[in-house]
Image (tube, rainbow, N blue to C red):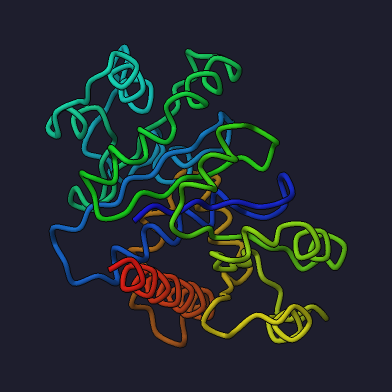
Length: 276
């Protein structure tokens, strides 16, 4: 299954932190020890999936590898496909960063390439790359740039499900629902940094834009979650609080985020059944 996390606006929709959170919680909520999720992004940014999931300076070891290779991650996968061949499965996972008992794998877009070169390579190979990664995993999740990149358009077309990351802003909501009818056909909606005191509540947005309850979820605003993302401690934070009780100050956040992950997984199962 291939999933694109995307927003129609830049920088305000929490796409990266939402994807990182959902990818981890989906695995923690699964009863399968052999599950594999592969995540990557089609753009470069200081704040990326790698910087959220782990930090080289973190006291808590969450990654089972300590260094990158000369050419690894997404670059190594693209190089192989450009040569007309596929990496063996063992090599693929050797070139990835792995977490959570080798259930979550991250393919970084290394900064040795500039953004234009990365986009040129992805324009040509993003579809073969997604198909290749899907063969060796249960789920491929892509942090997709909102910029008008050709690779973003191709990834959105190729994805079985598009997680549209919304904000509680009327103008931005209207912009999406008035201009992206094609994406709406396979959309699951997610609001990160959700403020329950806003006038634009989940229910208001559902009623205004005709969204069913099983197609929209929220990840509540929580400063401890935000700090964990910025410090590269997302996985330890979620592991520590996953089973927290009601007296824990992060209980409301964890409950809301776990509900979002459950709704996301339920939607994935619907997509899978529809394909069969």
